[in-house]
Image (tube, rainbow, N blue to C red; front, side, top):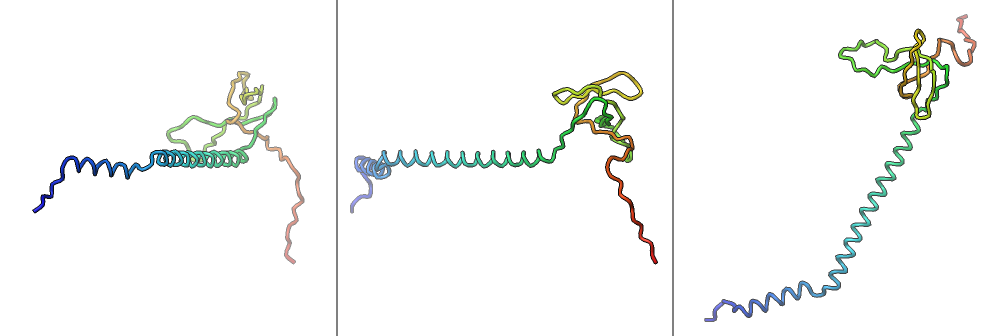
Length: 149
């Protein structure tokens, strides 16, 4: 009977033959790997481009909703209460004032002072809104009342 054992020389020959068959062409394998890496890089850059486009469009849409507040010296304004209270009343106003605008700075800071004192302080313009003294601004239309016959 023939033995099934393989000699070390035969084993080494088979291993070298398998390695040669797997790595048949180092040049084409390297080129394929290089192309795969560049394809992944292109996919990544495309995804980054899509994400930045989405962010830009979202920012543009959100910026359209923001009102630009412009204050002039002498305007009456209300100041938003930013202090957190433990148990605020449901019907308490979040706005205090009115205040008079003393000065407007380029960076959005507004200097205001209360109507009843002369001490002024500076606040961020985002915390203010214009105050109207109950004077109706606009056209008053004549109401036509329906009278049954």
